[in-house]
Image (cartoon, rainbow, N blue to C red; front, side, top):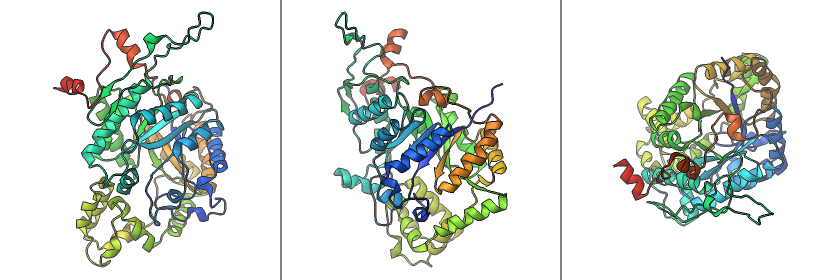
Length: 463
């Protein structure tokens, strides 16, 4: 029996993401690293040398002065990934793009271009945007409600996928002798008229060697999980412990099966922070010191407002019970996260001050310890079906090097991670099937292409 191998992703947030406001003070991190292409190229190549599957670029489009340093000044994902595409050869290139504030045709064209430039290494992290303030940057008075956000997302993704299939894979004979560039019978116009989008098509771009970019999804709400299980090739998530990881993994795989998909065709990659020390105690001390260095009560109080639609918690008495009424401001923001915080505070009878202090308390990651301990824990999660891989946050460069130099050799010796790249696409390296063109498949099966969500034909099929 062949051992399952751990998939590896690297999250590039050089000057520090949420909860890490002072990462940029590390002497090894240039103050402008988040807009320095040389920094990204250096770490993408390090990850590629270590045979990582992908690098991941997160994104958001609304800031306040209290946003994390990396959020305050950073490059647009697809522009950045296009630069990385010509600076690397094998590693996957995944970026976050919102379905709430992008049109399907333009997004399909940009991502399809990245997939061709990288020769089949592109991936799309689908989000609906939790920061309600983003709506104001796109001419809206308020963000969409949850039902609309996820309804739009489903239709958006399926329209994008259908646009990517505008040309069948043999549409371009490019036969100079017969002067035949295109076989018109292999070109398909979408002509989609749905609940949220109307897109005529076709997309003037052929498919890459992997068929379509790999689609990831990162929502943890019930709606997010359902969307991911339905349209995702991969799931980005957060698992605070092994038991939570197993529960999430099982839930996603079960939902995928309920949609008629093979559970093996969807990979689960939680984001993790790894801290390596000479001993377990040494690693815990390194982790604690790092977290305490990022601990700033005033800043944390202000950042608490982010999942609540950037609600100002400074207006409340710090020593009064946590203001449960603030949850209403999260309805068009990161509602699931805000609800968890509210329930935690209310169930424990915490004041606002105590809530912030509790959220700021140093926490021990499951992947903190000696190199042997971290390797053992990663293997336990993999063998215990709590994950298919990890998305490791590159915080302090010294820690990332210790992971590469000390943990990976142990896992490689055990056969848990690859020795070399076996495939020339992101799909191939992740073990995700090639996507057959929808029109080619329909002709082969003697049926019409499946109707897209949001159309009258799709509704009729459900009824």
